[in-house]
Figure (spheres, rainbow, N blue to C red):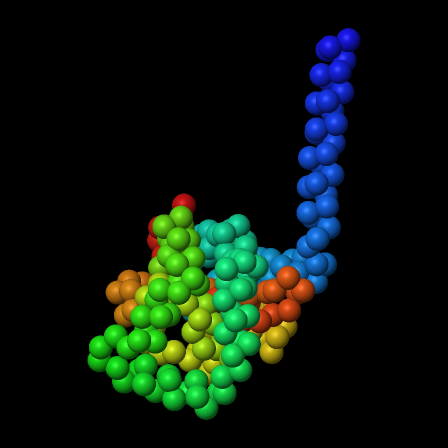
Length: 226
């Protein structure tokens, strides 16, 4: 009898856990799921840039490196699109309604600064920046990383970027994509912000309702990918 009761209790517990999991899954807005799937497919379809490969060996190496990057994007970077901290911080900055003219004035001061400005300090130490730094410890191949709002202004970062406003650059234009979202994989190049060669990957920030509210740019040290 005791054995039957124990088995019944165990079965009920398992059923409750499955039901809870199903309920949690149902809470995800279908728009979010659809957009993430769209980004996953776009990542898989992205072809490697072989324009600078002079030999078959170089082409092979670039193709293999690109394949590793595609897997990393799908498994590790796509979840950042809905990172709760990023979503919260981007929403808060968007809600301030700062004009583009004001953003460009800040950008001008940012680029001319020879010492760390208060806004540099804030963007390197707010909750968004802390989350980026946490992720950088977890993902060792992650170099420079920064989150942008719906106009391309920096929200948080783990290193001082060369400029504050990214709204005129492909990394924001193609990932925000007029609120539709997209993925852009740039060529590997030297980044003076981190004094290293990395490959920039940019993706949209998506809120709980499936709205594209900003973007995130991640510098990936591809040579360290396994």
